[in-house]
Image: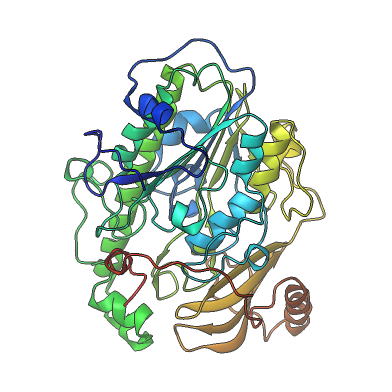
Length: 475
């Protein structure tokens, strides 16, 4: 592990890994360079993939939310395509980002248990574009998305969280490092792929004090405590009776803290986009803004994520701006994070590897119509975290079936059927009322994903226990 303390970061610091042959001299020069920009546009489009960790779609202004949580994306949204029904493949980070990097469902790439390592047998998105001549760099604030877990594959530069402290890096500190990388002498002359994953929307919803009043006009009330007694009782110990103690004030405090973190995070993402403009690197770039999963804010009596496959934890925002795009568009067709891999490759005019589960979204991006086709594709979801939930889900048209094998509530082998058009909050289980629909969808789901089967043996790594505890991943 190589560490650079450039005086740019507050603790926790980042670690820099070199997955490829030593290029430390060039990297240090890039990180220390200041003002080395050029007006020369790259011959091929740059790619910027921004994954805002733990960002649920329905808490963003552009997705109809009542609060101004995302003005930082307003300019970007004015000339990009918004996908209103975008889904992750899972409700927690490791499997969903592995899907993003491979174009495969979790049951195929096998990153389905905590600490699993992404196998080198899969050709990652970074490997594919790097082989085609793009310089690639990743900046991750999530300790699971690290070289230790195999996510560095294909990146020329990988800057990740060490995991030796009790908090993730602040998005603004990460942005400082990205700014230094963008100042590299060849950023305007050779194409590159940038991956950026900040963590501030993840509990404990960290926001610097000077920014805590920007959304509400006041600092959020702190009655809710992330991984506090009540949260621990309900989701960690399965005491569902304790839900009665979650008062409206308690839930409002939770929501206020989360929304404040969303506002701060997306304001900073907006700064990244402005940074690209100031360096003449914006117009000719393919820019994607999305998330790895959402967050439950007591919607179904729980908190955090990975405990269910409800909409609040699997429906994510997705904007895509093509190089040179000047008009906004809306696509209502259901899509998945596995579609991003082929979309990027097709946009760059690169051949697609065989066996991808995703489908390129480029036809939607190049079309003048936003109407979805009549043959709506099925959306598959899965999670396999034994202490939290083992489940799979299928969405076809308005219906969504969740097949739960076990979860933190003590439920075993049950099916939940919802009509999302009539019941978007997923409050009324229709499985008993429409058994024929439930049975048909369950049969199709079992052919695609069987949550009862055990994953094949996968390599696992151990992370810093105190860091995991701070994030609520271990008792």
